[in-house]
Length: 302
Image (cartoon, rainbow, N blue to C red; front, side, top):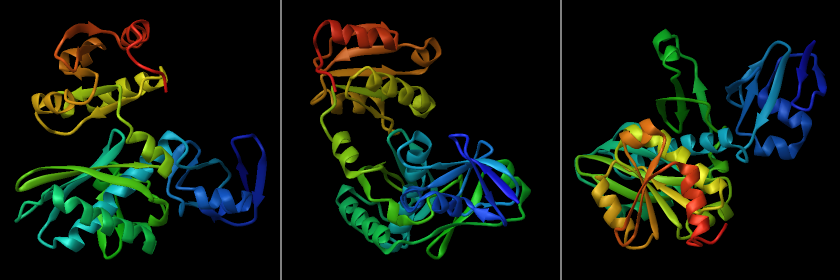
């Protein structure tokens, strides 16, 4: 007998091994449809993971941060698949979650441009509607597991990637591609959310843009963005591997305030603040930025 303890402390018993998805289905069809992964004794696993012994189990949905990150991770695989179908010469180098979204980097023989993005996005929408499965493949490679990487199969291609991933592409509905850069090595960036309402909210003009100097500040810049959001500021982060001057110049045209994060800011746990007109307000702790913006009435809440 397998005993499953749920987050509310309730106990369920099963007479044979079962998958995370089957646990969700036994609780209710709505939860089964929403499930993107599970936690078994605190460890994130795919929905197809088989539970063979008594354990504490919770079902992960896109309404929590881990679930949203899984959506974005899987969206990067779907982007890779779409690009390969449309541009056979493109070779995937890497793909990952990044801030509010994801990216894939490709080696290309012919550079793609921003005009290619709507076609790629349309192909991704078609792949989502077709409802392809994403399945983890067993591999004997010990080194792969030691790096927390596994082989996942989507369509006719296998990808070496961090898991878990969503069970099928049908849950990937609220996404958009928004940028491409590079020449023979190109990155395509996108965003993904749990609903179209969240996607539309993300598209609203921000009050503050958090700008990273380079890839080393990605995690800290995202943390700063989340803290600003929790204070009521509509904030976005530009984490692209573009030159910081380009990003500042680009956002100064439309965003009232820029928060710049470099290595010194990360090390000191503060940020540098400037206005769209170029006025420099110096370095501040993030909480001080929130208080200052509120005190001067510069930003509406929400």
